[in-house]
Image (cartoon, rainbow, N blue to C red):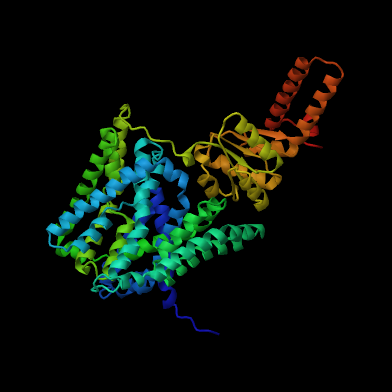
Length: 588
């Protein structure tokens, strides 16, 4: 039997225990778990309990011992994060919000970079280091800010959408920036020559190959896996796409994060994007938590003790410079003072990609470690200020809610409230046609790959996915949906979808197709607004045809059918209706 050293797994077990405490605790406090992971990293690292283990030996059991191996695994958190960012993008979204994304967001990154870089040059840094420092500190925290906006129900306000647009541009800028850092660090000290550009030919070839192969192979691969109807195989395929694309990029001389980002962009144009996003979310959350733990472990808090004025000065300077630039830009783009202040407060602090950029720059020798570590400490401390800044911004916005000074923002089609049609077979297709005829937007989901593919070829927006999963329904916009129509053939699946949808949204109209009155009664008890039994509807339609054929006036027939339908609905909703008619409706 193989001998197992428990020390090999001690750090992993300690992290899992930490995650088990941090996530529920911080969510109960309505704070981002990321802040908890950062704090846990500091506590479990050499600057926390590790500094006391010589005095109290048993504290070694609560200290991360191999920070290097943890950091290597934690890098996958950034890979999964960039993959998810790629999945959330679409050409339609970029086109709709182009003015805010490339206008406001582009100016924010450019001006904040220039202002911070100028300050760094004034303090004695060379141009390259100053530019990289400026760029890293121009990034805000998507992982903290967007969940905060969602919790406050402010992601669809003008300031919330502008914040999202700026963060989107920042996320888009990460991948090319990492390539630039690699280019600058490659054979550092060489003078520029065509030969130096030729050295990056493998990277260019690898990137082109990744895009071409991805366009040709990703959709057929996911369709093949979906037809197997195996959740385990689908999970394996998703992980293969993320890690495989990252490895192809790494072999080509690029970063794994860039490869995963490209794979996400390619999958974002397919009908499998929401199911893939839901599948990788637990891995992303766990690995991203490990990434922030590793950041906390690497924090040199002795700098805060040795140079408190410098660190705190950098912290305040970062938030004042970023916040000031963003406030002015938001005002120039037509936002009210309160909305501009909210955007500035949300984005004033540093973000997770600051760590990625600075660590890459330090690894390439482009930024001195002493400077980089000091900036990492100040940027991390600024992230702990985000909840307070967000609360202050929301308070300002509520106080000035009556102000009409908002720019005209094109509506993001991906955020449009729609009717969610679950099941796109014969019935679902007819329901969708009726919604289209009346100009009502809709989105359909189905678990049959053939039906999804046929709908896509016909130009309809139908996604592949399991609608009984709450995470998937939320990603399809259930919380803001106009209504849900469930037309699935499976009774168990139908009931699972109704129960999940009602749990997420208490006020949502849910109309369901039921096989018979027995199932309709169960669906009402699970929270359906209206359950339509096929047997009852068939009998009513037969009665209508018969009565009209016998010469009864159409108006009287329609009125009597409508009245009988209402009577049936009341009986199905009545838990005490156990009479003969109720038994007949249930098929007994």
